[in-house]
Image 1 (cartoon, rainbow, N blue to C red):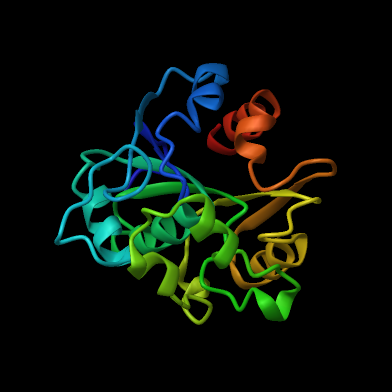
Image 2: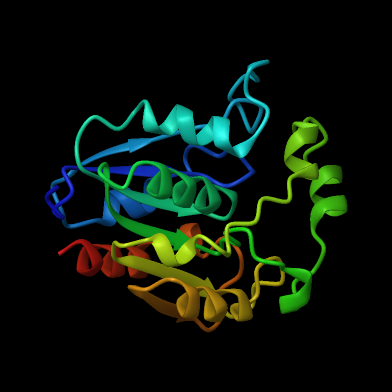
Length: 202
């Protein structure tokens, strides 16, 4: 397949905020078509009884990919993006993963256990998400596409050690660190992130 994307699909994290990536999309110089997804049961997107795991979210997103596509994903969305790229490498040209985990053992890499506080902040979250322990670490070497990792040095949920480990496990990965950014760097540092994405896709 061509390695030139014809679409960018933006995937949010567990907040389900379908507007999260809008500032980045608006700042991109590329004229590639963009699409923003939501997750059933997260944010303002109504839950669906047949969506009970990250693999179901990946299947949903795959159904939206009708041409060579770059995936830009935040946190939980990054795990979904990797599932998509592993399942359908013929569809995905590039990955941009911001503050994600991709199934690594986060506590072992110094991450704060965020689940209790996250559940308190988002009490309607699907239970399956809070219980999820997807581990993709043994499959990351299968990713044969360019991967841009974006990290905030002040991120306690997914600390920089996670990004450093991912860049070791993914064959064609580049890590960009924002010194004063936190977990939501894709939103707070939109213009800088857009410049990196333009370069990554170029």
